Image (tube, rainbow, N blue to C red; front, side, top):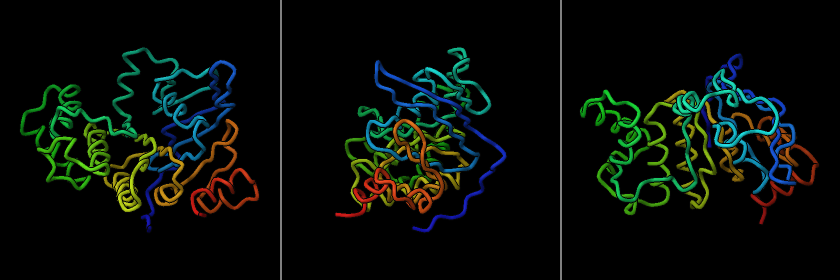
Length: 257
């Protein structure tokens, strides 16, 4: 899949992580992680299940506290923020969850409206409808405004979940396994959407995945989490140009029967 060359500002780090560690009881998950995300970049984090990928984005968003290390997001040290400051920072972060996290009792439009009116109380009905129309158009589901989540396919639910994330105009998008559970054709559509979001909304993104087709399609840079540290990083080709059996087995699982 062709990916347009994005406009990445390599002098502007929107996320900067140094020496990050996190353990649960005797299980060391992250063992001194260093990571930078640049403005306008799609960064893919690869790794097997249980390697700490989701733990990483929970720490970035302040949902988990690191044991050691520094996590700066948009120039703010996450561990030193007050609850109110952390809430304000989270409004600049967009979360795309595996299950889309839609309210089943609300229509698509009501799902999109919910976070908008909660955080922007001065909007008129015309403003709200206009913003909903913009994000539905962005994800290619303008016709689904009045549908219920139960009437949508898995891929459509993913798209609406992304639309709801975009409605607050986040600077950073965090995608957690965006193609999980989807068929190959729908996965390609979601990959295209992630690239379109980057282009249209000027977002910087971290994409957590073990789907190498997704990684190759959306990633400007890839990092691979092995044994609690990022031990491979670069383009798709650079990451997998190695004899390391851990990396090769990961590649073979995705692409070789």
